[in-house]
Amino acid sequence: QVQLVESGGGSVQAGGSLRLSCAASGYPYNNYCMGWFRQAPGKEREGVATINSVRYTSYADSVKGRFTISRDNANNTLYLQMNNLKPEDTAMYYCAAERATIAFPGCFNYKYNYWGQGTQVTVSS
Image 1: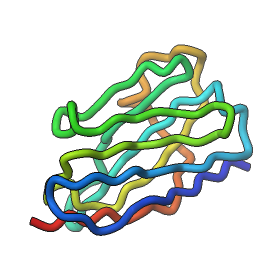
Image 2: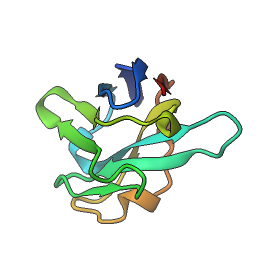
Image 3: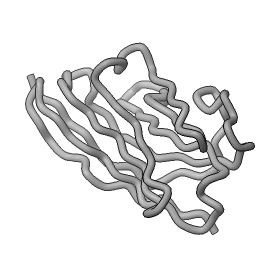
Image 4: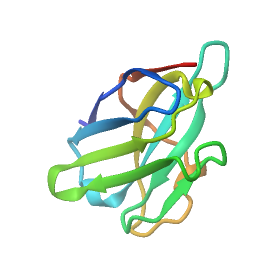
C-alpha cells in the first residue's frame, strides 16, 4: 500500500523560504513519477513540480527559478525547496506518486492515483 506523508508547511512572510518533505513507502520508489501539487481556496488543484526516476524535472511557469524539486531515493523522500515565496503561493500542498516507466518524460501532465494528506503553506505580504 502506497503511503505519502508531507511535512514542512507553515507560515512565512513574502520573500521567505520553506522546504517541504514527503516520506514515501509501500512501492518500488525508483519506478514512479513524483510531484508536488497545490490547491488554493476556491481554485482548482494545479501542478507545481514533478520529477521522474532519472531526476528529470518539470515546473509550473509561476514557480520556475524559485522552487526546486528533488528526491532522495536512499531515504524514499521527495522534497520541494521554495524560495522567494509570494502571497500567491499560499495553498495546500500535496505530494503525489504514480507508477511509470524509468525515465518517463511526461510526469507533469500524468494522472496520479496516490496522494498525501497535504501540508498548508501560507505566505503573508
